[in-house]
Image 1: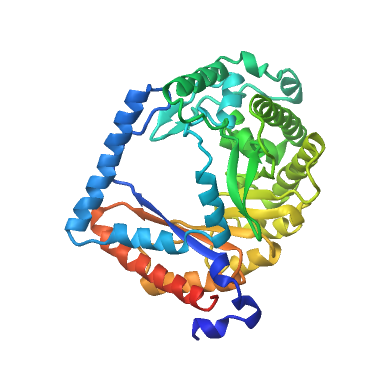
Image 2: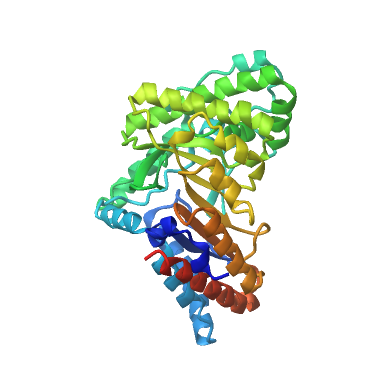
Amino acid sequence: MELKEQIMPETQAGSHDEVTASVWFQPTFLKYAYVDPRSCREERQRVQAEDRGVYDGFMRQLESDGCRVGEVISQFNDRFGASRRVRAAREAKKKERCGSWSGWYDARLMIATALGAPEPKWINGSWWHDRDCPALEWVDSVEDVMQIPVPDWQRVPQFQKMLDSRDLWQKEYPEEPPSGFGITLDLTVPGRGLAQFVNYPSFVDLGIVFLGMTRFLTVLGSDAALARALMDLIFELTTGYTEFLLELKPERIEALCGFGGDATCLLSPQLYETYGLGWDARLFDFVRKTHQTPDDLPCNLHSCGPSGHLYDAWGRHPCQRNLTTLQTRLLPGEVKRLRDSLPNTQLELTLHPPHFDVVQADPSETRDVLRQSAKDAGFRNVHFTIAAVVHRPEDMGRVVTNLTACHETMEEIAMYGE
């Protein structure tokens, strides 16, 4: 059956503006130095130039060998990377002069370090905590949790280092005022374009940093009293730290980010009801009362990994009408069930190994997955992030073939929406 025959008449209008896609190119064999945010301006510029040289040199070599992968990716992202509203909003954002100061540790790591965890290490372009030394590994009871004070954030040594880094940026880049403290991000709201979301670290993500993954999940499944005490503590920590940052640099709260979390997919449906949905409802109520936000405040839900077992719970989310944006892994054949649970949400779905490997898949399979997923999403409010993960230079030909198949399929979808 041709794609045109699959599209119901009422879904045709606007499809091109609502079904978007982008390629995330990941040649894992390229070795970068990565800019350390603690370094001085000259060192940052040197490392940035070195890393650009690694990538640009590789792409030039591919081009000289007749491999069009750079051109294919550029054309794909230019054509399908964002809706018209989002493109217009991004262009407007470019006029706002703002530096790229990294914000130092993310909030999860800053909070954990303030409670005694070892300082994170800068590895491969990111801060990483020591998984063998969780901040609260000594905690064994509700009484232990009750002894943990909320830090005076201004007096936390690691936070002062972050302020020093910010001050250094202002001196070295006076023409680029530093951005905020890494607690805002721009995400798509259907029918509106981009909105600025303020992020509060989630219970699940902080809990894993505090106790270690195995211990934290064991507590959730076996000790309800301790789990609830931890949730109360973490709620006080995440809201306290985020509000502290908002006092230092006020931000527009156009939308709320903090539902779910990177590791939400590890929870069973039963645990998610208590520690996922319960947390989200509490956070929404806190932000609404603290900042007098409207009842229809847009909210973002996140679950990095395969989350098919949570789709039904998402459909019962206490703030379901507020869920304007979701990021999760695309599971072939499951998008209709996801859309049924979240009929009005912008679905940002990642095609990523092992659940779908666009580099190793047959082009016909790639076409089928994109077509079916777009159809099951209703040909609206969906973005596909295609992770082209390449482990060997000799696979570049497959990248070109499959991304060309992606481009042709997206053109078919766009053709019947224009």
